[in-house]
Image 1 (tube, rainbow, N blue to C red):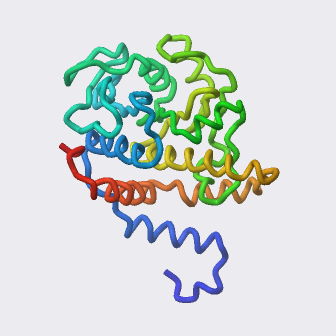
Image 2 (cartoon, one colour; image 1 turned 180 degrees about the horizontal axis):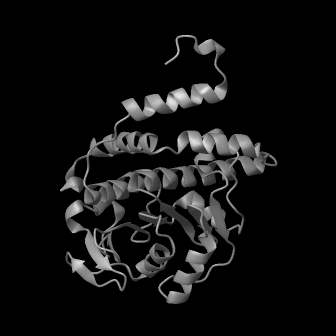
Length: 261
């Protein structure tokens, strides 16, 4: 690093910071099943509880397979040991019980997006409330820019997403973005890693809450697009997502580590 940082421009300082992050920031070592179980617990602890509604999945080692929760278990009950490995037809390959039939749209989305490694769908309360207004998510604060220009909107509710029609519609609606707000329903995250997906889901619900708090006070003002994209790229880096996930995992694990078993 230069010893004369006061003479460097912003872009140079950001690049130096990226180099330092890649060198010093290390995420925790968890298996994919542990990461998925931790994500369930982290989201439960942060307002994403809605009974048995919602699914979190990640691709399995074999093409056309993915890990998911067992139907009948809430996010707060999910452990690495009670996850299921299923194929695209939701047939259980490993584990006991059955997957949520609504997981069918995950199969469609994984087929459409080879870049996606993790899908999160929840009915977090502020997101669900916003969805009732048939209004898109507004990104207008620095902390929420991790989602800037990356949230699609499905303005009409297609009903319970257990059919192939819903799977095709959702996969088409999200396009190449990493998030989707479904009217009268909830949020969807399609991410490159479990850690990234968890962070985006947390940010989505926080953004919805802030929007509902700000809107009654006046018109929400847009931010400069270039600065929004700059903030998004600053926040959404692999190493930063990993250490942020590790932080939330530590918070959750203070309550008990049974989800790792």
